[in-house]
Image 1: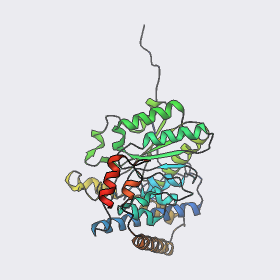
Image 2: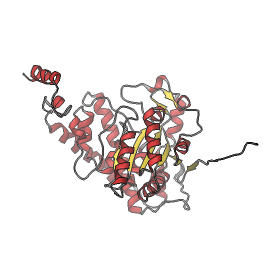
Image 3: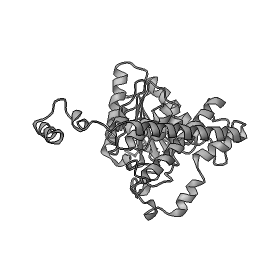
Image 4: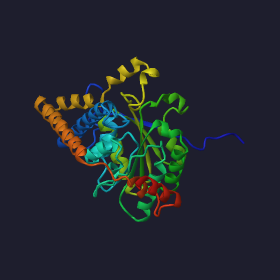
Length: 353
């Protein structure tokens, strides 16, 4: 018997806005001028928060911090496509997502200062605590999505992670689970080319990360991760698909981290300076600003006002965080088990007197 082809697959890439601020009008998502302005405001606020956090960490006022510089479009645009009723599962580099969803700025500063109370999500928001272990939150997102489906809720679970997470078993288990049960999950990978010092070429031999979804029975799409319109359109369609019973989707946002992996890292030891400079020319904030200027949505006054508002909001948030007293010492014991174990009870007595 001759061999025959039993399946073929196609992996697409979506691009709408180029580096000069020119957009393909035939592909533009349905965003009003006001909505585009709001996305830009969230991108500037996210970048301003990021810059302040880096400064505060260097002053010893925050702990180790993971910068999002260069990834604002992938975060803000995808979060803007979600609704407050959707559930967000962030990794440790999703400040822009949290800000766009309305997470209080002072609580983000609180978390990065080492106070875990900053991750006690306020009512009205469905944002899970930051997940530091790489990829371990993906099965949580798949499980939550399955629960939404079983309960008949028109909601989606959005899970954010980096390219390094695709090498973890949790990634494959979550994808398999979501694919088999057609869970309303949207997996958003910010492929920033580096898993600390490990380049993408050492993570996978696949031509794209997006194609990994095909093995699990659902759609994978690569988008220009520095293009707010491509990210928004892909995320919006994936979320709507999930809520209508169409199952999960995987979006690979092809982007780049312009800063170190964290403030504990020195990327000059492993990244070519020329590579970083090339990606600076693809800055997502600059790209959207150029588009808005051409469309008459941005002028010098709006730019100044937005920057000043962002700085004011960040100043107020940090001062509010500083006014909060330290957590009670017994907090480190209070939420480990439902009832203290004998060993934990002994530690509490010794520590607390």
